[in-house]
Image (tube, rainbow, N blue to C red; front, side, top):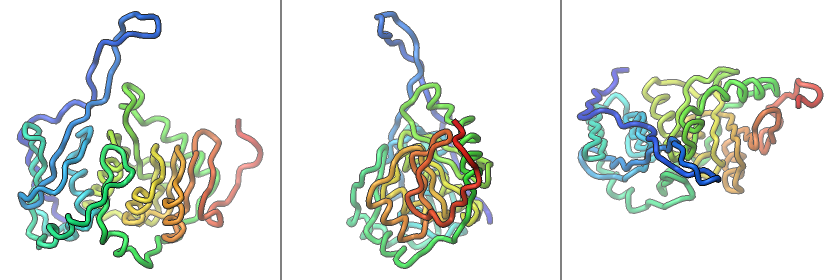
Length: 275
């Protein structure tokens, strides 16, 4: 599949900056903090939304966002993506008919996401009756995945204040993204998978953030059957995970995790307490 032409009119922004702070003893020290910046998304030059983002992979972010909102669906129709950090904008140009976008914008609902978290009224109806493919996994695979993920989170380790998301297969981290909002991170991974025509059937999706309804919906849109989180899960998130057939594993860190849905898909092959 041909990729769209990506035009960047300025250098990519930095992910962190160094600032002077005082420690608990009143001594001056330096620390890195995560940068947060607005990025206004334009579709065929019509303004859609402004995202707050770290800005590390803006072209994938805006594609994933527009795809997940149901605004675009034909990757072959994409012509170009223009990233301009001087105006803090990202324009996606497509030959696809996007005349429906204006009416869809009227249905926008602000959700509980951080950084940005908006879904549109027609997205959930599009997924009515949808089930992700069944994927079995081992307890030992969960442990191996969590161990592999400890080598990532570079921005978080240096500065904090960001979320991380990853697409994994077996014990391999295929792609890892950090951003100021977990929804930005999942949209970025969705954009990458979509451009690469990568199936989610054999994947595990990991996030450092909580599993809200919107996070579960986006993972379902990606066709990924296992959702793994270091944090907790909301009631609506769990209800939707059960509806879509997603195996939901939360509070996952080290050798601890809790399976909230899809327990029948997990085989516990490790005996005893690892700690």
